[in-house]
Image (cartoon, rainbow, N blue to C red):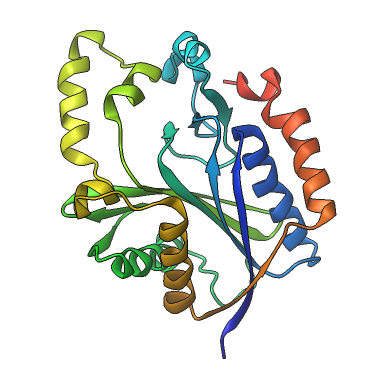
Length: 254
């Protein structure tokens, strides 16, 4: 018996609305107004998101972000700073009472990330889970994921890299020891990969999202019904975006 899920393909939005909509969906699922939800989305303009517990001044070159018109947003999930550019981002929200929920964070990551691994296999990429919350292919990281548990629900979101530009990323992030920047960039280039690197060709957002949709459906036994965000979710996302995620009080809280 497949699990009934709502599928949202919400296209490209700015960082503040993207994070606002993830939170609005979390609230909707928590209040049982909508089914558990899988969402795919992109970022326009490009953005840096930092983990909930990170200090923005320690992590982000704010002047460079302003110059390059890159959004900076603080997530409600933990983890490190992420440069969002050529990627497919997903979020999945399920009640903690759902059969796909796992009490253990590690077990939860392992199960939910199986959808990404299956999706990548449909593009011809063999990938595997790397605890605690990464997916690797060819020995290098292709997907990072983060999770929070609020309102008796699990929200997990993460990125699948279509291509990767480490030099641009490090022009926007701060390096603890500036003299070590070149070495660090080379190390990250050796540790991180993308669909384009692995396949030797570009695969677009839509094709990748379709493969991931099929992967989640197969790996987690989901029956996906495509929909649009509800009017209430869209209104809530705009409000949360304005009052929280684009607020300096939230962004600079650490």
